[in-house]
Image (cartoon, rainbow, N blue to C red; front, side, top):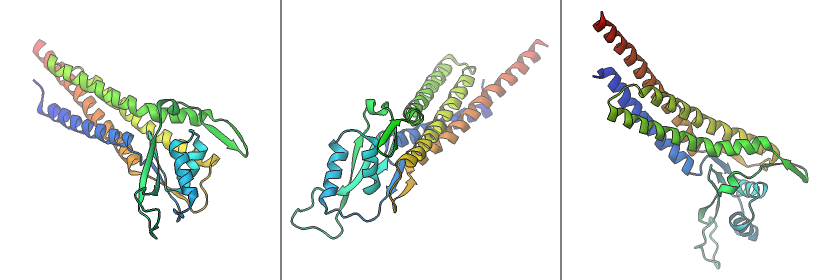
Length: 251
């Protein structure tokens, strides 16, 4: 039999784990990790069309697409980079004073996620290993976190089927590691963006801000840590209680 306190801890921990998984999944899959607020842009100019075509169909080069994002209210995520451009449905014969803008996004391919990052010094560029590993870590760590939570769910199901409380400790440890991976994802992203702005500074008037996708991923960290604490407490307390009962029966 399981004490009601331990059963309640398991239920609350499971709910927190589910919420953390949903928040982290939504954060990873959306592009609002970092946003640039650009000054007023003349969207009627042909230069905007050229920037859009280079951004969508051009070669993958971080310096070029970053400068386009600076100018066109870009947003950046772990898997996406986006800009705001005039809607293609507008008439070419009549230009509205305030054109309707639409968001166009391009996804990072798997080879691009593992490509080397560069730092720029005037007209020269060199490999930036620190930013390269930060970028790869921010891509891999959330996947590792989700995999650990999924594995902990399998362990929990097996524990229920076997009617054993012992694997609960392992579930808590897996959630603890998953929470650290979630925190590492946000930390790597913020450190990488800070280094990028040192080498490729946004022009004057462009303001950068953190997006809601990053906050969702950040919220998943304390939820996973609270779930881990509940699972570990339940496992440890149940073991002590079980040991005392066995000792009492033997005596």
